[in-house]
Length: 230
Image (cartoon, rainbow, N blue to C red; front, side, top):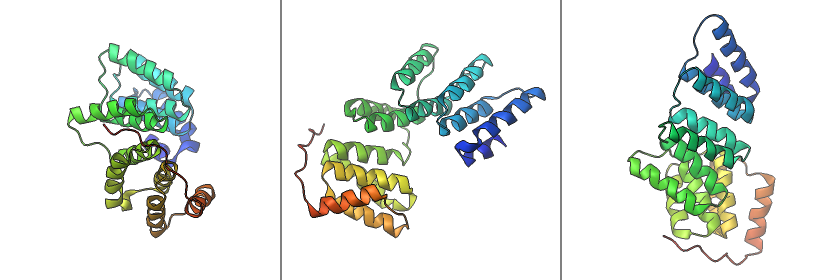
């Protein structure tokens, strides 16, 4: 039941909490899975205080958070742009023996990329590669947007090629991020092509971005000086 409310999105986070409380009253002990689901639910609802409260409850219940659970808590902090609290949490957990995995590193890549902390995001990418695990497909959206904004054409286009090869997996909001990143980087023709792919999927570009794309095509601007590729 809790899983159903998590999938339903933010308006249902309170329902998930009520089910969790009822389970405890009935004598059912909270599991790592049920606690993680609540952290995810409140994270989706942008309610970072309740997300952290349930995370702390899980720790007091004797459960050690796994990579998925920590990634959910970091995501909750990301929605409120609380990078200092997220990093402090990671430091605390690592002192207790927690080792971040691909899920946690992927959230950090996305967050640091949005902040244009390219060097730091690349360090997280290296951590994923060192683990020899397959990174989630969605991370290519973060990589493409980050490098596009930074003007690193080669790396941006490598990620873009991977995305275009599996365009049917992209959501509307992900298309938006890609188009906006390309526009910011001055890659107007590529932004136009991605917009056309977006339309083929039946998605509609936001009015703000649609106007920006039209203006960029009508009034070409000089691209920013590219960041040296490593």
